Amino acid sequence: MDAVKIQLSPKEREMVQDPDIILTKNSAIKSIIEMFGAISRYETDYINENRLRLPPEVSKQSPKISRGEQYRELPWVMLDFPRVFDPGATLAIRHLFWWGNFFSVTIQVSGKFKDKVVKNIERSPQGTHLCVHPSPWEHHFGRDNYRLLTEFQPTELTRLAEINEYVKLALVLPVANYELAPSFLLKGFSSWMDLLKD
Image 1 (cartoon, rainbow, N blue to C red):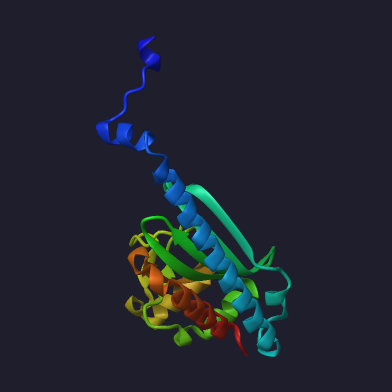
Image 2 (cartoon, rainbow, N blue to C red):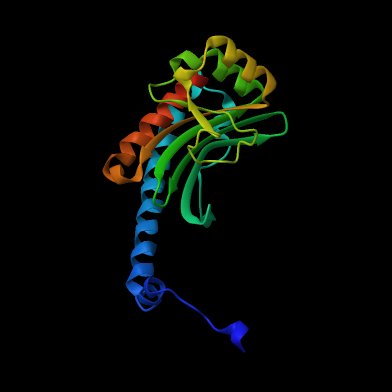
């Protein structure tokens, strides 16, 4: 019977008795999802207005918002648009809210999209980070995952682009600056789209 006894710390005991904690969290997540929905509508209009200068694949899939509870044990909300996951070429612009950490907007490319982004990488905005992790599916900004683009010599960039199947660039905004998130995400999106233009 001792094995099934539940031991909670004083803080845990206090929290499990307070439904407002979860209700407030759910309300905050709902607000983030609504913000991402509004952003996706703006971005759809942007792509339609710039269709002639962008790869045709960018408008084939509609925006997708998803959410979860366990990226490194914390909740998250994600908007992917555009999202192209073909066998020979990937293009995804990902907007991420990670609870307690940050908002980020990334572009992940492979194949022909990678070639175009690498060719135009000097157009990247100030504060751009380059992913150095072997997996493109990590999102944190630890040194083992991202480094500032300005830390790389041109020859290093060329070598990384040659040996990696993908290139992933990111901008980050601390979650404490929540009020700046909509303009930050939209500006990041347009910056990444600029790398894809002819």
